[in-house]
Image (cartoon, rainbow, N blue to C red; front, side, top):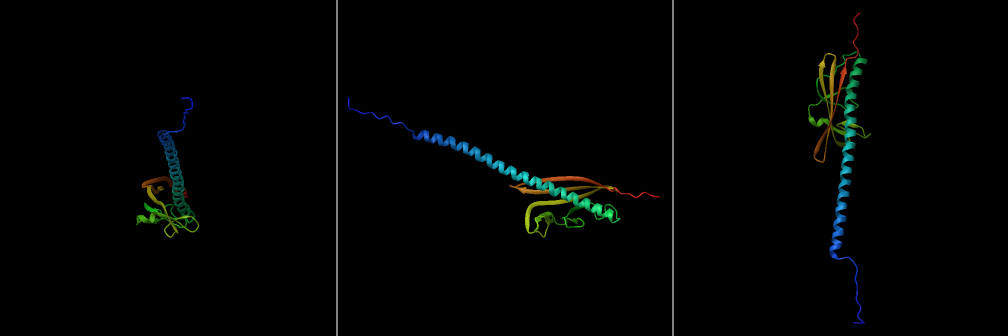
Length: 170
C-alpha cells in the first residue's frame, strides 16, 4: 500500500451546524425580547409623564378659577360645586361631565390637549372631581386614564384648595 493516499476531511457536520444555529437563535430571541420590553417600557414611561402633566394641568385650571373668583370678589368656590367635570385650558369654568366621552382628550392645531374640537384624538381621558370638605375648602381630584396594549392605566392627583382670603369684620 505504498501508493495509496488517505484523505482527512475536516469540516462541520450537519448536526454541528444545526446546534450552532440553535444556540445563536436562542441568543437572538433573548436580545429581541429585551429590546421589545425596553421599547414598551419607554412608551409607558412617556405616557405616564404626559398623564402626570395633564393631571397637574387639571388641578391648576381649577386653582385658576378659584383665584379668578377672588379677583372678581366672588366666593372662592363660585362655579366649583361638588361634581365631576372636564375642562380645557381655554375654558373659564369647568364643565359638568354629563357624557363620559366628553372626558376624551384631543390635540388641537397647536398641539395643546383639549376636550372636543381637536384635530387628533389621543388615547388620554381626563376628569376632574370636586368634593366639598368644608365651607372654606374643597378637594380637587384630577384623573387621567389611557389604554395601552389592552391595559388601562390611571394617574390620579389630589389637591386641597382653601378660601385663603376671608375679609375681617370691622
